[in-house]
Length: 270
Image (cartoon, rainbow, N blue to C red; front, side):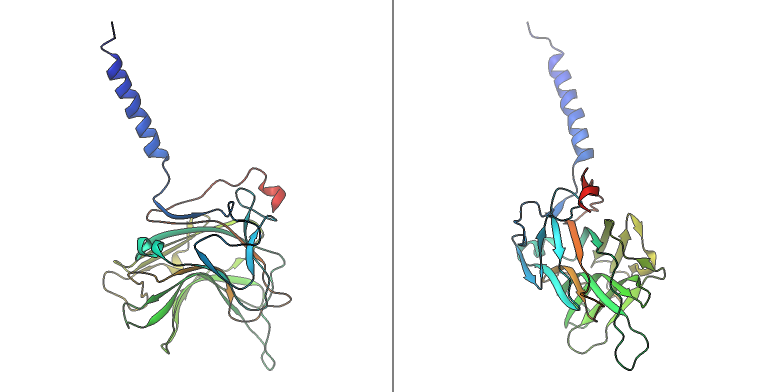
């Protein structure tokens, strides 16, 4: 004779299991790219390429591969995402990536006749139509401004592409490029004109924006992005051969994604 308590026990087991699964389930990801399935020298499917970069096995945050941005004095070395995922991303998303820079990092090149210079670099950006002026813009979701000492400040800025003046905000505190993996996260929301940025889990509040619904001035977070680009684009020349950079564990989602565990042998592949 079957025990009448078995169905109840079984139901409790299922309930407990479902709770554990819910607590450990990953964020609602739209994109998750660790570069492990991409052949060395190539870029992941679904992206287009600008400049010299490709998957490499000389460094990884997790797994055995990452995206290596090759050195160049200036210019874009990026991969760009277009297509169906952009509709899913809409005007609200969380993003995350890990990056590190080959040391010693380059310095700005001082133009002839000048005594100082800087380097403005973008790591994450998206093309869109401005909700304020209805013109094409480049929304730079993660950037840096490097000074003559090699120190830099994180930036959020927007570049109108048809004559309007560029605008943005920069961190008050300076950082140093490192060859250790750095976790960068960003959040944008069109409905509230909000932007937030985090490094290693800590928000850089200096560059946060909370404008409010319909308040586009000084933010211009679009309702949809035409594309999103990831990599390294320095607009002014860098010394020597330029920056060499690695990116890994890139992800986009509707909820905050957070960190992902580093490979146990990552120290051997730094």
